[in-house]
Image (cartoon, rainbow, N blue to C red; front, side, top):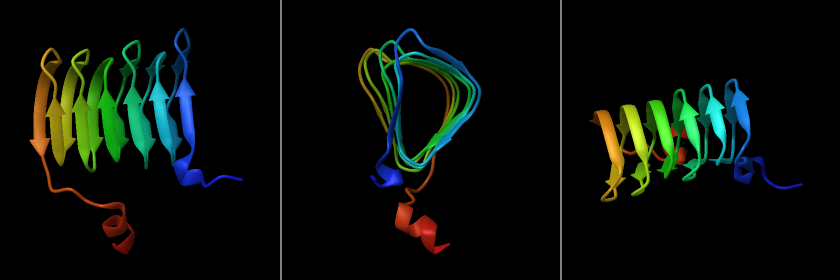
Amino acid sequence: MGNESTARNIIGQGTTINGDVELNGDFRIDGKLIGSIVSLGRIVIGPSGVVEGNVTCQNADISGRLKGKLITQDLSSFKSTADFDGELNTARIAIEVGARFNGKCEMKEAVSKADERIK
């Protein structure tokens, strides 16, 4: 069996899920999720993806729509097709030209996974 921390999960286009999701690996949303996400990995919201709820993860790549609070331990990346409405708490941020960012941003120091395990 593969390592759980490298597991990849997907919500496909045309799929809607209502509820909270907790996972150890990466997660890609091309459909719609209404609820919160907590992940130790990377969250990708594809161009057709919609998330209405709070997201907590290591890194986030947003190309679709996110309405809620985004907390990343490292990098939050907003692609040119991103549509963000909410609060952001991150160590690093990248916003491409064309992205829509409407909200509040708070910057913090990056915390590596190794540092978190030591605590």
